[in-house]
Amino acid sequence: MSVNNFALIGAAGYIAPRHFKAIKDTGNQLTAILDKSDSVGIIDSYFPEAAFFTESERFDRHLYRCFREHSNAKIDYLSICSPNYLHDAHIRMALRNDAHAICEKPLVLSPWNLEGLAKIEEDTGKSIYHILQLRLHPAVIELKNQIDNAIDDKIYDIDLTYITGRGTWYLYSWKADMEKSGGITTNIGSHFFDMLTYIFGEVQDIHIHYVTPITVAGFLQLKKARVRWFLSIDKNQLPKEIAEKGKTTYRSLTIDDKEFEFSEGFTDLHTLSYQNILSNSGFRIQDACQYVSLCYDIRSRKAEGLKGDYHPFLQ
Image 1 (cartoon, helix red, strand yellow):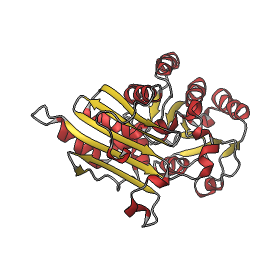
Image 2 (cartoon, one colour; image 1 turned 30 degrees about the vertical axis):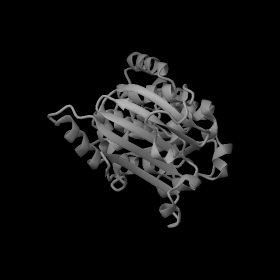
Image 3 (spheres, one colour; image 1 turned 90 degrees about the horizontal axis):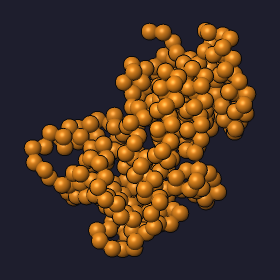
Image 4 (tube, helix red, strand yellow; image 1 turned 180 degrees about the vertical axis):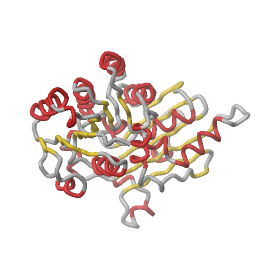
C-alpha cells in the first residue's frame, strides 16, 4: 500500500491527537500543519519533521507549491480540525490544491453551504469526507441493525442527557460565539443528533423548551422515536451522585427507560474512520445533511417554555 501525504489544520485543539494517531496508525505521513497557536508540542510525539505554519497564507502557498512543483511532496489529504465556522473555507482550500478533505463535525454550520461543497467536489474531482465516529461504534451499529430489522412500527421513547462541565474560558472562546460555533447544540450535540437521526429516522417535529448560552433542551419527533434532550456545559447541572464523585461529565441515553450503554469503545474510532476513508468508503456530504439542518433549525428557534413533553432535568 502506498504512503499518502497528509496536511492538518488545527493541531492545538482537543481532537487533533486522534487525527495524528489515525494518520500514523494507517501508515501514512503528516508533512504540513497549520495552527495560529504555536503551543503544539504534541506534534513531537507523532510527526516532529512536519512543516509547521502559523499563517494560513503561507500554509496555502505551501500546499500549492507541493501540488504544482513537487509531485512526490503533493498533499493527498487535508485533515480539518479547525473552529467550526472555518470548515467550509478549509475544505475549499483542500480541494483547490488537489487534495481530498477530511473534516471534523460539523461539516458546515448552515445547510445551504452543503450544496456549494457538492459543486466544488464535482468541479475538482476530489472528495470531501466527514468524521462521524459514533456511527462506527459497535453498540450503535448493533442498535441500528435492531431498529432496522424490527417487524413492528414501534415508536421509541428516548431521553438524551449530556452534561460536560466547562470552565470560565469557554465563555471567552470562539465556542461561545453562536456565529462561529453554532452554540451548545452544535458543539456538544451534533454527534448525538446525527446518531439519533441515523438510527431512528428523519425529523418530523421540533420543540425548544429552554435556551441559555450554556444549556439547551427540547423535544424531537423522529420517524421512529420521541426524543427529550438536554445539553449543558454547566457543572451545576450534574446529578448529585456524579458531582460527589468528582466527575465533570454525565452522559445518558435511555430507550424506553433502559440505559443504552456506549461509554466505552471510543479509543480507535478515528483510526477506523481513516481506514474507511482510505478505502473510499468514508462518510460523505450527504451524511451530514440531516444533523446540519437540525442543528440550524434548533438554534434558529426561540424557547417555548416548559410546555408539552419536556426533559425531566428541566423540573
